[in-house]
Image 1 (cartoon, rainbow, N blue to C red):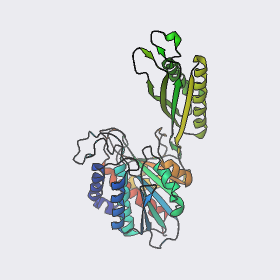
Image 2: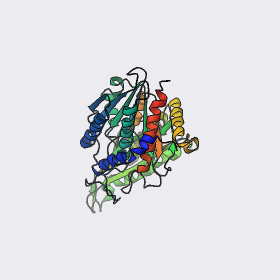
Image 3: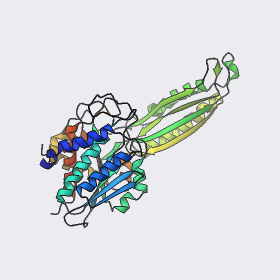
Length: 389
């Protein structure tokens, strides 16, 4: 496995950076300590420019190749934020912050990109510019969009952009990628049912929002089973149902909420349309008012075909062609790197985390053995794409 020797040599140092971040998790945009540590290290590495406060708390480092700023500019992105979860790993570097932990491996993502930045700043064996992007608020805050809205692509002249995420269950030393949709759009809906409250002993005097809600939950399941082509991928999940406060009162209102996951714009439109139609129909049947609030969150993460092919080739150069899955099945989780891929060509790849607990699990931990592999991928991506030859 041709990991870059220099990166293998300072694996322990990169792991120490990760462990420090793991001990001090921060969520959403409140990644002040994390961003400060990232900016300090980039400055220590001697990168040409360090910019903070982009997208509120994002950090960007600029590394120019041996021939200066001429040529193309490649963006490499890592996310920095943790999750509101209580850690149960028992690791010596476990979270010291109650109710917060790095349960998605963003500490590892940040450490890998820092390792790559250190190497690239030392060697500069490329013609053009590498821009290392450390993003806040991937976990539901849309930090990628915030950085774009602050002029990320234009300010740094980024031509292509690449992202990476660890994957539990995929062996260490393996990568997985695909052209086209690789992760889903992540929409949310909230439905407020307004009926007519009454004494529980007089149900005939009510328009019972709980009964309406139960019918609505069942009807929403038919969107996927009866409105969507079986060859398409759509998820509609009701995840919240709140109603009532007493045993002897039929309440006035009930509230439902959930998520919709889709891999195409067409299916996204269909799902929203059918939710609104189902709500209107059920409301009419029972004489209740059902207000629909549908929020389109992260768009579909779509890999550009040429960039996905290139990324797979680079990964194969590190771990071998047989250890790169070039047509991994799309995943219905979401990723706000999607916003960056809407603005520039690029690709998002998965790197193996081995036999670990799953993402967003309190027993999860990033595997330090992946650090030099991921850092080598970042370096070779830059050196291959911006080859001076």
